[in-house]
Length: 122
Image 1 (cartoon, rainbow, N blue to C red):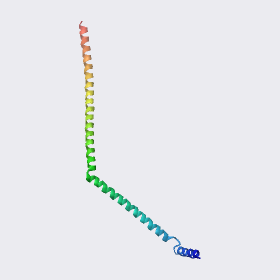
Image 2 (tube, rainbow, N blue to C red):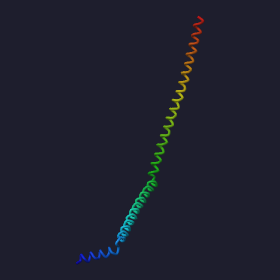
Image 3 (cartoon, helix red, strand yellow):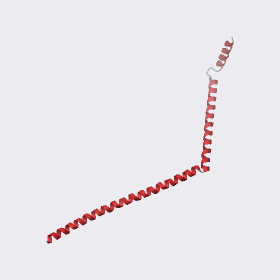
Image 4 (cartoon, rainbow, N blue to C red):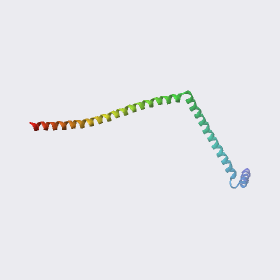
C-alpha cells in the first residue's frame, strides 16, 4: 500500500504542476547559481593574476626586463644604422666606378685620337 500512497502523492504533485514549471524553476535557479559561481571563480583568478603582475612590476622584474630589451633594441638599431652606412658606401663606390669607367673610356678614346693624329703626320 505504501507504493500506492507514494504513487498517489506523486500524482497529486504532478497534478498540481502538470507542465513541470516548479521543476523548471528549480533547474533555472540551479543554473543561475552555477553561472554565478563560475563567474566568481573567474573573478578570483583574474584578481589573483592582476595582483601577481602588479607585484612583478613593483618588484622591478618586468622593469629590468624592459630595460634590457630597450638596450638590446638600441644595439640592433645601431647595427642597422651601420649596415645602412655600409650600403650607402657601396652605392657611392658604384657611382665612382661608373664615372671612372666613363673617364677611362674618354681617355682611351682621346688616346686613340692622338695616336691616329700622330700616325697621319708620319
